[in-house]
Image (cartoon, rainbow, N blue to C red; front, top):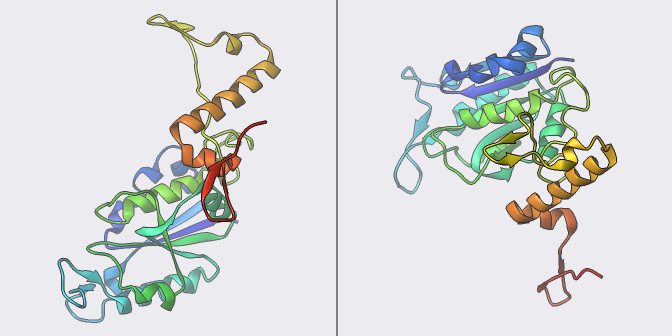
Length: 246
């Protein structure tokens, strides 16, 4: 089954962009996934092809019109009725590797790329649109975020990465950051590859990698470490306390 991606955007020329090269590009050419970049402006209802208007209540900027967005989504759903519709917005739920894996196992996705001040709020409930954020940052539009989400999905499609186990130990797959990697030369500017990685002892190597993964996650991403281990618990009073090791 081909993973079908429909991108609703004011700049369809931005696609496939980087997804047209490397593993994603090869998979696109081989038909592992398909892409349709749709111009939102084609669904405008006036002769000027207007897609935005001033915000209700006043304020700076412009807002994408709900009627135009609805027509674009309805069009996309005619060919992909089972695909979830996702709007890329800083107000959305943070994108996780678990959600990416769910999407990659499905028939595809319809991505709605915002511009200006964003979307008319009514589109989310009116068309069952999921809001997703790729980080606590503000971009000029949703296109770069859409490329990021699609890349994360495409690399998980069968055959794209080669060996089926290629992504199993990567960051976030088990709730932790990935362990550090090394390669030749064995020594560079006085820095050497850890001896355990040159020992040939696969059990010790696996233990070292697990330990390093845990250490890096704890130091670099305490939020992930907290979720992974439950290092904080909720007391009856609602206060949080650290779990003490035995």
